[in-house]
Amino acid sequence: MLRLLGNRKTLCDGISRRDLLHVGGLGALGVALHDLLRLQRVQASPASGPSKFGQAKSCLLIYKYGSPPQHETYDPKPEAPAEIQGQLKAIATSVPGISIGEYLPKTAKIADRLTFVRSLTHPYPLHGTVYAVSGIPEVDTRIEAMPRNKRQWPFIGSIVDYLDERKSGGRLPVLPRNIAMPYVMGSKTNYPPLAGPYGATLGMRYDPVYTDFRTEGTQVAPEVVKGARHKDPLLGIKPTDRLELAEGGAADVTLDRLNLRRSLLDQFDRARRELEAHERISTYDQQQQMAFSLLSSGKMHAALDYAREPMPVREAYGMTLFGQSCLAARRLIEAGARFVTVIWDAYGLNAGSWDTHWNHYGRLKDFLLPVFDHTFSALIADLEERGLLDETLVLVVSEHGRTPHIDPKPKGAGRGHWSRAYSQVYAGGGMGRGQVVGRTDAQGGDVEESPLSPKDVLATAFHLLGIDPETTVPDAEGRPMPITGTGALRTELLG
Image 1 (cartoon, rainbow, N blue to C red):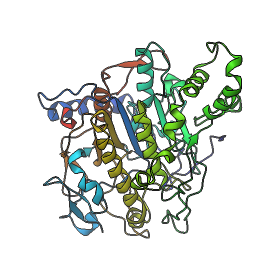
Image 2 (cartoon, one colour):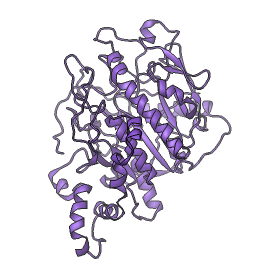
Image 3 (cartoon, helix red, strand yellow):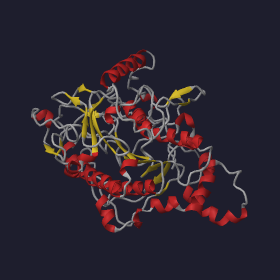
Image 4 (cartoon, rainbow, N blue to C red):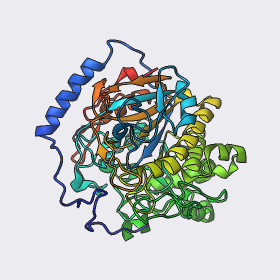
C-alpha cells in the first residue's frame, strides 16, 4: 500500500489541517494541565483499594474512530430537554440504578460484567488518535498524519511489546505481541493514515502486525453526508470473506521499505520453499525471524482464521467486519496473543465511522449502535464462558465525546466534537463489574465527579497488565519518556 502524504486535506468540520491552530503547548499549557490533573487524581482516588497488578494476561483494545456520543450510549439524560436528550431514550440494565441508551439492549443485559465511565475529560475536541492511545501530553494537529514524526509517542500496544521483549531477553514470541485489525487505520478512506497505533519513537519494529481486508461489504450503509452511501463491510460481509496479513503495515510505506518488509504471509510462502536451505536464521532481521517462528508454529494463521469457528458462534458475533474481527481477536488471545486491537475505522469517506456530524440518528439507529451492541455483548459473554474474561482486559476507547446540544440543521441531525465530558466502557482483567465511575451535569457536558484523563486509563491498563505505570522508555533522543505521560492508576476502576 503506497500513499503520498502532504496533500492539503479538509477536516470533517470543513477546516483545513494547515489552518488549524496548534492547540495547547508542552510548556505553558502542558505544565498547568499536568498540575490540574494531578490535583484531581489526589482528590478523586480512594485512600486504599485492590491492587490487581498483573491480573490481565492480555488486552483487547476496541478503538472506535470518530467518537460515539455519550448521550446515546452510556450517559443518557432522560430528564433533559429534547435538544439535549435527543430522539433516543434510556433503558434499564441488569444492574439496578444503571441506565444506558435504548439501542444497546444486549449490552444492558451484561452490565453486571462492565465498568461504565462517564467522566472522561480533556481539552482537545479533535480527532487526536495518538492522544487517546499514547502518553503524549497534547494534541498537535501539525503532526496528526505523521506517524514517524519524532514528537509522536508510542502506542500502548507497542510499549507492551517493547517492555515484554526486554523482559523475555529478546526471545521471539509464539504469536506477535502487538496485533491490529482489520486494516491499517485510515487506509480505506480519502485521508492518509493518522498517527496513533504505531511504535513511533521506539521504531517500526514495534508497530502492530496488521491484517488487511480487501473485499467489498454486502450492505449499503446509511448516508455519511448527503448522497454519500456505499457498501460498508462493517455493516455486512459474506461468510467466505477473510482477513489476511497486510503488506508492510505502516502508514508511510516507501518503495525501499516495501522491498525490505514483505508481508508476513508472503514470507510464509517463501519460507516453505527455502527453509531447508537455511540452517541458521540468525542473520535475518526480527521480522523475518518472526515469520519463521509463525511458520513453524502455525498459530497465527490458524488463530486469524475465524471461519474455523462453528457458524452459530460466528453469527453470535455478527456477520460484519467488526464482528468477525472481534471473533478473530478472541481466537488470537485464546492462542496466547498479548495485545490485540480491533479498530472500527472509517470506510469510504473519512467523515464516516462514529463521527456523526450528519445523519446522526440514521447512522446510530440503523448501523453503529446495533452492530456494536450485537458484537460487544457476544464478545464479553464468550470470553466469560471460556474462562478468559478475568484475565483479558477489554477497553473500548475513542478520541472524545459529542456535544450536549443537538444540531438540528443537517439531515438526521448531528452532534459535534466535545471533550469536556465523555463516556467509555471497560471489562475484564481486573476492572470492576456492574459499576459506574464518574458523573456529569444534567446536560452531560461537564464532569461533576471523578474526572479521568485518557492517560489515567492507560496507567490503569498498564497496571493490570503487570507494568508499572511509572516506567519510562527512550524517546527519539534516548531520554526517558514516561509511558503514560501525566497518567496515574485510578483504583476506582478496579474490581
